[in-house]
Every structure is written in structure tokens, then in C-alpha cells.
Amino acid sequence: MNTLTTPPVAPLLERLFTAAAEQSPMNSAEFTDLSHEDLERQMRSKTEYLDFYGRLKDFPLAVSRDTGALLYMLARSCKARTVVEFGTSFGISTLHLAAALRDNGGGLLITSEFESSKVALARDNLQAGGLLDLVEIREGDALKTLGQDLPESIDLVLLDGAKALYPEILSLLERRLRPGALIVADNADYAPDYLARVRSPAQGYMSIPFAEDVELSMRLG
Image 1 (tube, rainbow, N blue to C red):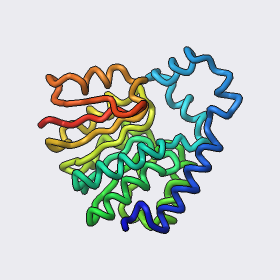
Image 2 (image 1 turned 60 degrees about the vertical axis):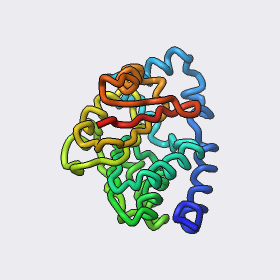
Image 3 (image 1 turned 180 degrees about the vertical axis):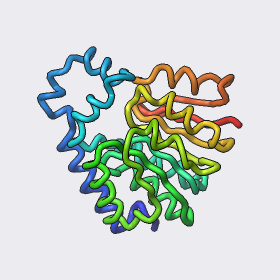
């Protein structure tokens, strides 16, 4: 028995995952008409991300079920009390992380999302899951919202916003990462600069690709 696999969170997540599969942007003509090259260019762009993700404001952009379970397991196993998330969307990953904090005895999850409509939906979902008290949702560009008022020590980070910004977001958080802190980067293949950084022990990280679309890294100290 735990928060993730019992009501109200378990049935809420089942509903949200089902809706996310039905509402995938890959089912939308606006995005299916994009060539692979155009999609990759926009995903990697450091200048077009506001427009690109603005066009995705009505889509859940959820982590996979496996990635959600991984987030919960990692947060539980490292006994996380402070978590930072880049890219809230509808709050599916946020629910997994907040459930882990609840089962760890409490803590704080700071998450950032620049689309107002998604902030409102995520807040409603967290309220429905009984986890809103553990979460601080910061609305706006994460380059600003995650650049101040952070915990002294961060146990776990999820990067799941604009992929091109992963190195910049990591830089904002880096001095707060405790030794052994974990960083999960979703779809990190679109962030080659980030991968080069976390895969270099000289930069203070140990990192491996995990499953098909996740990079799992650890701060060495």
C-alpha cells in the first residue's frame, strides 16, 4: 500500500494516462505534417521553444507510464525531500514525484510551467490527488522561475521541458545539488550539449541512458 497505487492517485493517473494517449500531438495534423528534420530542429532550438511549446499548450506531453514509475521509485529510494521539475504540463510526472514525497514523510516539489492553462490543470490534478500541499507551481519561463528561491539542497531533478534548455536549467540548479543527487532527463537525445556535459566525469556527473528516452545522471559531489 502506498500513495501511488491507491486512491485517489491511482485512478486519477489511469484516467490522465488514457487521456494523454488519446490527445498525443502525434495524432494532430499540425504535427504529423512536420518533417522529421523540422521537428528535430524545433526541439533543439534555443530561440523557437516558446513558440513551439506554445503550440503544444493543449497537449498533455506526459512522461510514459514506465518513466512515471521510475520517478516514484528513484525519489523513494533516495529518500528525496526536495525535488525540482522543469516542465509541469498537466502534472502527470508531478503526481508521481509528489506521491513519493508523501510516502517519504513530506517535502517540497518545485515545478515550473510557462503555460497558464497547464498550470491551472496541473493544480486541479494535484488537488484531486490530495498532493497539492507538497507542490509549489511556478508559472513562467523556467530560466527565470528556477533562477531564485531554491532549496539549499536538492535531492532529485526532472528535466522535461524545452530540451534545448536542459544545460541552462542544470546550471541554475547545479550548486544546490547534493552529492548523490539524481537528474532524470526525458527525451535527452534532443539535447546533445546536455548529454555531453553529464556524461563527462570531469564535469562532476555519472550518467547512463535508461530505457529508450531517459538519461539518468548522478551528481558525484
